[in-house]
Amino acid sequence: MGRTVTVKSNSNQKARVRPSLFTRPTPFVIAFVLILGLCILSLQAIMAFASHEPPLRHSITIHYVLPVAAAGQSNEVTKTFHVRDGTLFTYTPESGQSHILFAGWYTCDSDNPDPETRFDTSRPITKDLVLFGWFSG
Picture 1 (spheres, rainbow, N blue to C red):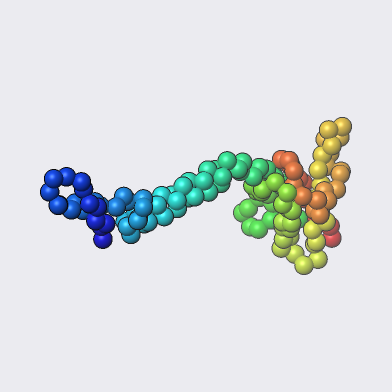
Picture 2: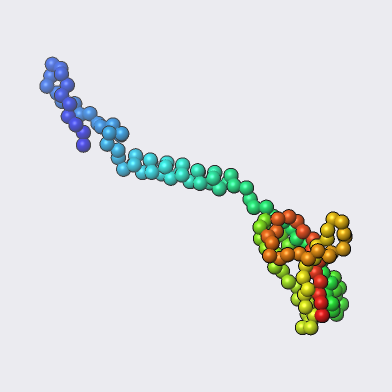
């Protein structure tokens, strides 16, 4: 436990000196140091995660006209999707008729307001888009 030290004095008494916590750490000190280390590592991980910027989100607004509308409903459809930067847009609307097929998505150029430029669905989304769908059949 402790070590015995002889003290020079007139009497022949011996005094017991307790060891320092750092010369012989107790289980409490070991546990305290381990918990403190885990807390520091956890805080570092949280700070590293919090410093990352969230991925950009883009909105894609689609417009299309169904060839045949259901009874009492409009055949014009507008939907908005929110996608992360770099994802592919692969939504394909159903016409409700087996002989009418979806022809694809088109975008408008700044020079031409009519949707004549075919949208390439194999390219990742990098900005907000407005797409127009066409059916053939």
